[in-house]
Length: 573
Picture 1 (cartoon, helix red, strand yellow):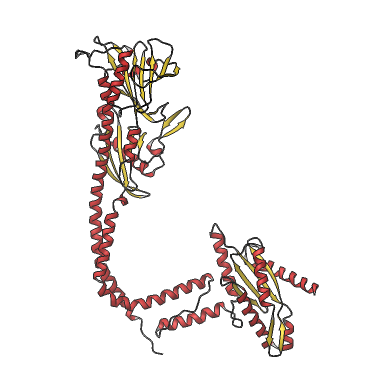
Picture 2: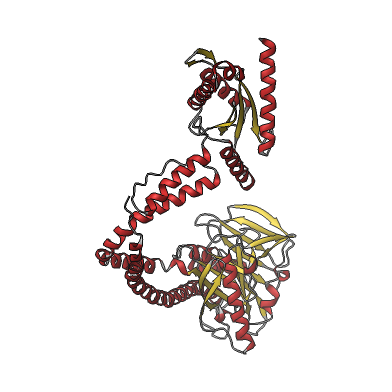
């Protein structure tokens, strides 16, 4: 038979060179696009942080405007604008000012130096609560009110002195507004910050303090509405790294004792927030060490366990005396989708362009590679004990000769020559594979072994000859294959003994069904040249792992049960 050389596989270097050209061009385009996207990403995230700052600044400005407009500057002495601490005047003033700046805060209130207090909590457009305490009164009364001067009902009373509240004394000591730390409001349960400002008489004495509770809900809703990227997150933290608001709806407070405490950014579950906060805090520390304030936006690229991420940060609230930072972070992969698509398109176009040049080479090597892969897959199956069909490789070269030798070798290795079923070596190989799978998998495979022995087989050889015995063994083998599933394995274990490996079997009820099928198929007459004989079998069984976790134990258990069954049948005969 004429042989054909495999030297034509030298076309592979040519194929490599042809593919190298479009790959190199595509990579250059990808690299250039990545650099452009990285630069654009930094600018986009910085712009988003500045947008957050602008929206938050407007919110804080509104709160400041509410305070500044609550009472006129006593030095201006504008007609009709003099301050009065009369509770009726204060009530109308709070209604008027809070109505102009409803988005600034739901709760606006005034505490006087003489202990008087009035506060308006706008729950919604229809429900409002008025908090009122006369000067030096023992109790504060809370009313349901629809408008100024109207009292619908008394909701409750409590003991309350504004001069003892934490917002009063700091604001009374100075003329500038004072901001509190972020806290969870007792009533609304929402993150809130309070800004307070002292109200002074013409002689400079403190008449009281006006304050506004600014809920962070509006900031959180604004962050939620931002479109950053698929996995991008925007958050605001203070100078100590404590969380103020976040776009990923993660809980920002943790109950510690009686009062909930704000979490640090480093304590958040999101790895993006942790990585970004660490970078921003390091930037702030570096600026502080250099004696410079944090004024300009900051951007950086970070290498994390999840890949490269882009971070942009900008200071927030400086003009209000707040040391906050807005941070926007997003994985770089979110922005590289378009570049990757363009890169793939470029490579695809280049491959199409050189397709004609590759066609001849690919046609030459395709047939070789296909058959080599088939041989490799078959060798791997043999190694782990799986049956392999004859390789359909009809060639006149070295690979064809190898395939024919492989088919013959594989058949001899796994098949009993007389009966055509699997042999003992194949059974052991298969069992080793199943035990390996059982050791590596959380759900070990379910299987059972049937040990089958022909009854009264020796007299067949003695009376009719070994040719007749071989014919009986062949007939039994064919009937065993017919009585079992394609996924089951029939093995001639030796002499007149057979083993059947039942896959996906884990109960005796399933084993019993298989045994009944086998008996019905095997225990029939076998036609011989000298006449007919009855085929009778004894069957023992073992289930993995109940009856054993190794091949020897399972076979021994099945063998013992087979002998028990044989004795029982003889005793009953």
